[in-house]
Structure formats: structure tokens, C-alpha cells
Image (tube, rainbow, N blue to C red):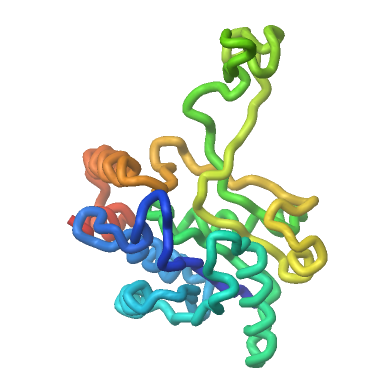
Length: 244
């Protein structure tokens, strides 16, 4: 299997400007992601796709290669699947085609190398074409309420107002990574393919950094894990602690 790794990190973000390189324990968020990808040992190169010179400099600082993102794929309307398709075509044209593409979101600061290795293994173990990192909901989504004529009503109906143990088990995208067989990606042109399985990320280290408050949560989770006093060879000791 020829694996390729792409981290999409455009320079514009409306909700949280510059989130991809925001400091987390003294290190840019993107730095954690690149380091984990490199430490996984899966990829001959870790590529960061960006339209931003500062992000490109940070990517190179942590050992990534930079793929210059076309302006047409850097706007608010650009889709990640189109960025992936463009990148796989570029790889093929330069003579280094990939069988499997791993798309890693730049803000996956608490992701570990073993998560990536586990996700890659699931492609064959589960006979899947797509593997997505998933986690559990903080609250049961079936208890959602919405407003009808000025009053709150159960969104999914009263049948789901039962103890959480009786509810169906559901997952949510953790915002960490997606493995895709390139032929399936080109055929289905979607990240949520037909043969999609989930690689579970524990809730206690799953945070999708999409607004400033999420940096506070990420730091708190790192501190909580550090309290477990991992040995010097543990990934947390070399990752989260190194960012202090």
C-alpha cells in the first residue's frame, strides 16, 4: 500500500482566525498534528496544503512538505473532498501516486501516532474503503429539543426520552482524520463513503479546536493526561509536555 498524508490548513477562518497556528502550550496547534503524523511511520512525506505563507513556514519548521493550494480551493465554499481529489491527481502527475490518502485536520492536536496506525489497519480489518476517527457525544443527541410555536418539544419525539443506556449507540466525527482508498474517493467523491467505518477516539482526548474556548479545553485535557505520569518513552511525554 502506498500511503499519502495531507493536512489542509488554509489561512482564512471566520470563526477563529489563525486557529491552525494558534499557540497551545507554547507550540502552534499545527505542530502537534504534523509531529503525530510523522511519528506514525505510515507516510513517506507529510504534506500541508495551504494558501498562507506563515502557515507554510510553520509546517516546514515541524518537518512537513508544503503543497501550494490553488486559490479556487481556498475560499469558504471550497470542499475538503475537492482538496483531496486535487492533491491525489497532483501526486499521480508527479509520478508518486497513492493507494490510500489520509486526510488529517490541522487542529487534531491531541491525536496520537497509534490512532493513525489503528485507523490505517481498519481498512483491511473491516474491509472498508473509508475510515473516520469518531468519538462519543457529550450529551445524548436523542434528547435534543427544538422550539415549536414558542415552546420546547423533543426533536426526535418522546419515545427517546429514556435512560441513556436504552438509547442507540451513536458516534460523531472527532475532527481528527479520514483514511480513504483513492480509487473509492475518486468514484464516490465524498469523505462519507458507502463502506465507511469508525475508529474510536476516547472522549477524554477528543477536542476539535474550532473556537478560542477549545484551546482552553485542549490544554486542560493535556494537563489531565500528564497527571498520569507517563514514562519518558510515552507519546504524551514527548508531545504534550514538549509543548509547555
